[in-house]
Length: 447
Image (cartoon, rainbow, N blue to C red; front, side, top):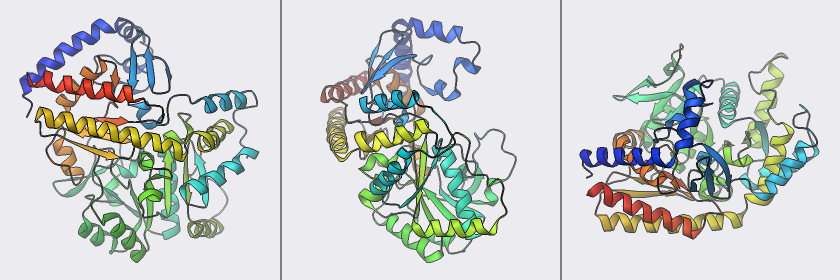
């Protein structure tokens, strides 16, 4: 157990060190008065540093700030650059596409090749392109409700699926309630969103057997409330229950694409009826896709025949723009390869082994969780089994002190939780520096 006084002491010392190391970041923050909270998007203030680091450039797994600080980047844009910053094939393809036009609202020849690559990689035959994973999840929910004629969806407590209103429902004292942090919500989401704990097969079965759930929207491993692995047999039971009750199963693999080539469903099973992938699929270019089975596609066609022409509520003008198509086609053809995953998983295994060794050496009641190339250390003695336990185990002040300590030593973690991503271009030296800095941080907290 780390004492609160030690956390406060380390956090204060590291805040002052950050100020000394990053004078231009402070000047930038003071001058950026035209932005709300001095950043172009409010999440940029969620980093635990006194002001955000201001990026100058990034290449591979290294980021450089305007203060000249070089960071071993294990955040990688919170998955957007999971396969490394600006891979050379991607940079070249984007430059070429930029000279030929960026958005036509028309299909391109390259799009046909992309559709084939998506099907071959992720195991579903039919695909659509959106601008973000949030938009893809919203589209999928609409399609599932339209196909089934059912109003409700089911999510797992603590889940996050982007800016999707329907997913902002938690269990509070065992009862569904809209997430307290949600801004400006005026409709009661609990009327159409069911929520149960992850890995609770009995609660899942009870909810689905009522026969009013259009789809289950899930990460096959929870990653947005810390990492909560699926219990043995749970995903198989989820698949079977969806089949039994006529419920469509949707996997949001925006994060769990880290599990292996083709994502978690392809690597470990089971296969969903629909899946969503965002962020890394375009190497950082804003784009996402959703794929679905031939049977779901047939239902979509039938549904379209029953409605009048006009707005469906699905899609935006920039969806499937030429730049996004080029980015995804290049990534799948040349960057997101089985060989890349071999490198990522080897590096992640090295990171896990190093962190576990240092945790044992320091005799702290922490543990390490891994989802392929995604690694997290949790400052609690046992792995959480669901969102409620994961939320209860969080120690925000401790996590912030650790993040700031590591940033001051040239190591970037994702600002949310203690998540680390290993790209195919992350070097062993970078992994070893992270492990060494982690050990130094734990020692400082135990002084």
